[in-house]
Length: 554
Image (cartoon, rainbow, N blue to C red; front, side, top):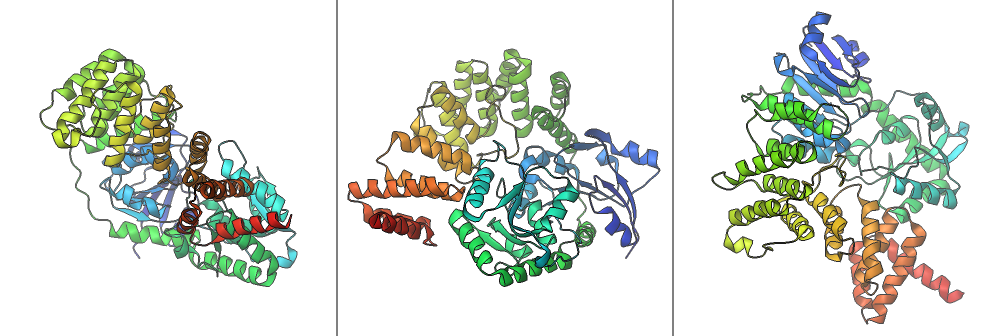
């Protein structure tokens, strides 16, 4: 293999494996903020054959002058699910992008950059026999108000299985603790394939992890190297099985540990990275696109509070660019949130004067920017332009002159239809930010009228498509059920969602209430058919029948 000079930015564990393969590595550990990478490499007198940046969730680092480098450039997006709002712009400055989340590869590739799945890695650790382990079921992770499902899971496991828990441990102490653990339940905030999966398997625990869908079975063989679960009932089954069968549990833990040592160590990821770098096609860079990508990256990071660039500086970066939909949307938001009504009116005038159809996300951004500043007439003008662009037949189904709440709902409906639903990772605040997605528009509609059950129902259905939105959905469905107690379909969905987020008791209560409501309306057969359709495993029905039998005996 040709010996390469590789620049690693925020390298984590990649440096030593790459050096072991015979390559010369310059590892940079920049502070959060903007780093002129061309100037830094000149200062270091290092001309790389390959540059790799590994994203870190804490200290966000942006490399400027990337286009000046002649070598291939790779960006490894580790926490893509939490940073997509700026990663989707930033990765366009690279020749290839990697993500730890298989379900987001397509999203990254849609930005016009070759994208690949490269999962996180485990650790090279010695096998610790289970006879030396003194912790049965154990979880390591913080319990906060932002992680309610985790809190409910830990509370349930503690009550059901006597599980123990650590919140804040150093990295070394965390690994040492895992090597004392036999059964390690996992929890994923956003339904992602997370670090804990690899950490627990590396330390020889029997891993019980959420079924995150595509990719999980490629990493660890189900039933043989780990167990997956979809709700609290299956979690109970999995952990109960392992506790009743300690020899089988240890064999599974050993198989998972062996899989890490054979396939999921840093050296395996380093080799994969080099293979991908060697296959990267030459990219033809269009004039102005790099400047656009950098400006939108800086804007997104500043809006989310990770950088502190002034509004006039950002405007000076965005204004000279080709006015693409992403640029116009950013400019409308910046104008409404910082520059004032005159700037919003000027942008709206440019957009409304355009010949031909205007992108709906641009019209929405302008309309919501105007509404943000109390300019309802201008907001309606931009909505009317959308109706005009759609043509009479499509526009006939939409309201013509809604009030502010109705306008937010109208945009939410239209954006949902067009697939502009969510913006993962953005720190959206209704008091400070202009809505630009269906999710955000529904939140605005509910701010106008929290009693709007139509908006509540539509928002819950929208969130039902997204990973990690279960806690928000729980609140919305509870609100709907409170106002529509006879709707047993809502009650059944609420029951199953409670079970999904580890609320065993409330899940059972809602299940019984939904059945009772259906029975009172002569619809118990339909209730049971719907239950079978939503829970093909039959666990929820088994829980319901067991509760009824217990009630009969009492």
